[in-house]
Length: 145
Image (cartoon, rainbow, N blue to C red; front, top):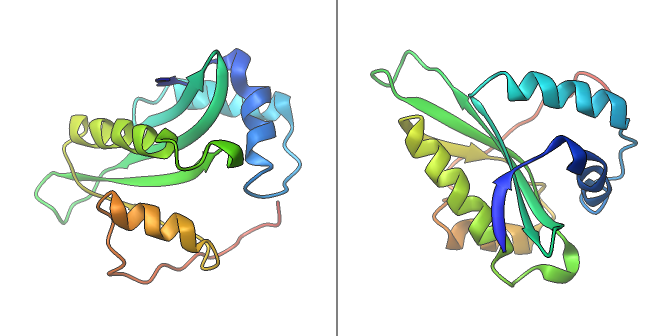
């Protein structure tokens, strides 16, 4: 298993994997345009874990500047997904370790993520790798996707 940054040719496969998390119709062309923007901003890190050149999981991290922490940044983690039939095999742990490395390289004070309230097994995983359920997250939706 290898963790690497997403490659343009892997976008279609990743979009298929995202369907296991949430059923959203993604446009490959639009996703490739977004990917190009992310490539040009080193505050974005979109990791995929592959085995035998097949994507088993992915996670996105974005480093954010902040004025309240003495110059430190914080990292927002989003779109964490592990292929259902490979959960429990270390895929998520390896992905999140790569997120930790990215966060440290950005001098982050902390990372945050939100998870849907019904995803209890994901919550257990996040707790096991050091995320604490010490805040209550909220999300405001601006458009239906």
